[in-house]
Length: 235
Image 1 (cartoon, rainbow, N blue to C red):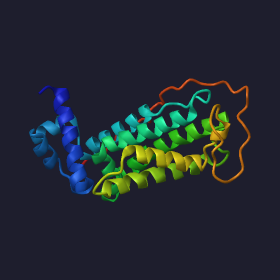
Image 2: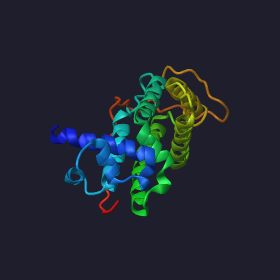
Image 3: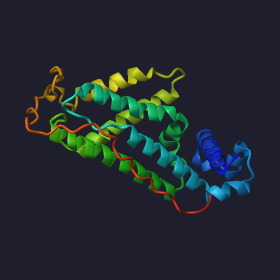
Image 4: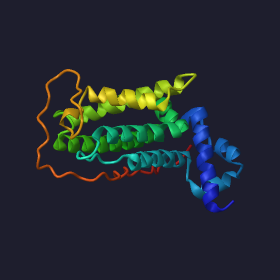
């Protein structure tokens, strides 16, 4: 096993241990036992358990940022939005162990790392806020407070995923995607303003159509938020 493979083995083992025991109860001894390496080997790659957890969280958020495409209002807006919802759900459910930690075990973290975790979440929220603000400029998002829109969206997604983790039989992913899209379409999405989209909105006033001279922008991958690495020592 080379260095890269050994490092990945430690990350996989840490993900499993954190998921089963929570951050507070997990020990470096548990991680190295599962990875089948000496304890000294762990410290060649990570200074403490907080740093390995930070890397797992940072990797998850990077995958989230990389999965989201920028919406092109001149193309099929509904398909693009569903793609983004589908991509986010896939990233979180494909790493269900880590998602479970973030949703269920945050209270067990030490205060210093709770602060870091909040910073990670804030970066994701800011990424969504910027996307919503761009959507308002393009005429596909209702005018309003993008910070609250982002909070509502993240809260709904977290609750759906948390419930899904507790169910004996998980909901089909496409059912989650469709339900979240329908919720947003009846909320702040302005599908009646998108080219080629039917006017299907529930309640409230229709917003003004997007300016005709708004230059369409090609879909591109959003920049992933930069994960901050915790520096404090100790298990």
